[in-house]
Length: 404
Ligand SMILES: Nc1ncnc2c1ncn2[C@@H]1O[C@H](COP(=O)(O)OP(=O)(O)OP(=O)(O)O)[C@@H](O)[C@H]1O
Image (cartoon, rainbow, N blue to C red; front, side):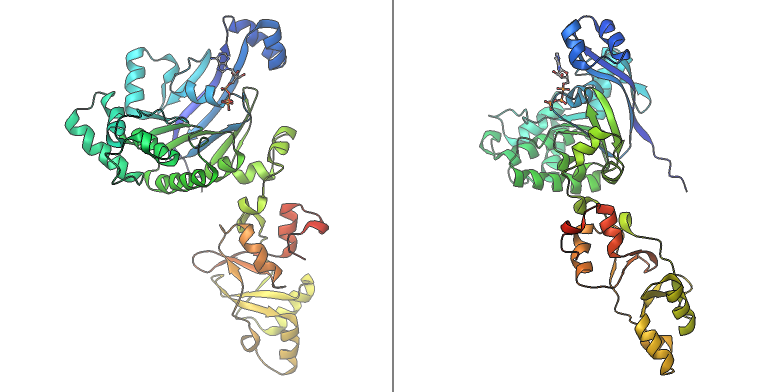
């Protein structure tokens, strides 16, 4: 079944050249001249070149890349804080790039909100006033502003702090105020520019968790700029890796880790702890062979011998897992004239498909049995053996993280 998701943002052939003579720079980019050389020859900076991508409704899309790769420029083109040199940016099908001032103001007001790294708060005003301020500049009446601001303050966990001055709050709390101010207008699209980069690591991680929890409920479309790969992998439904003003790859965390588009992306993700990102689903094999609970021991034994395996999962006709049969038990049972049911081990190791490998490795290293991957109805959907994990991590024998 194909799921058709609504495109919220469509970026087409977006170009941004900083400087007075963009055309000269564009013709050099087209000839494959590097960004550095273009700058040396023309004094024009290639901010973005021919960038195209879609962001789906309800998606968290992360723009990721080294300093100067064009992330902020791209984000700021989306609400035209930076004017694109060329290309199209459709939001719900309407092209931001060609709107007149009035249409642009209206679209920003109704659909877009931005959260900045430096919080951009008014330090001597209270929390509630800062949040309401976002609504005030949109022309929302005072009667409407304050109830909306209170809702937003509660959403980000700052209930009780409404009358505190923002200058007296910690960095994490200030960023919550920044987030509340952006949420108060109930935008469809949140643009977040390195929103958590100024926070220390623990608070930052807390804010990331909070955003994930909020997003679970709000289902906004979020474009999030980060130069931190761990943050990108944690937050992004999909990630665009940028290099020198172009997108090197777009994909889910798993896609980027397992199928990097080029050497640049490979190097970029080389240091990532894959065990945190890859899940049971990414490393499982097809559950074959399995044996039916209604089959005899002899059939089970034949299957194990034919496939050279020492155990086999036993399922009912609906593929619901019933247990595991070990070859030694099966051989003994045939001799003793027992049935499959008599020697079936029902206490099996199993995981759900979304469990990270990090949690699976200790389980596997304590046991030689394969691990069953089951869905919410207890149907067997995959099997994990040690080799599948090692293969996915592509680690060498001397470095098996407790798997030996
Ligand atoms: N106003 C400007 N005038 C000239 N060049 C600019 C301007 N803004 C950005 N640039 C250049 O455009 C390129 C992309 O910059 P941008 O700020 O988008 O990168 P970034 O990936 O967001 O980096 P960072 O993480 O450091 O913010 C850089 O080479 C930068 O020097």
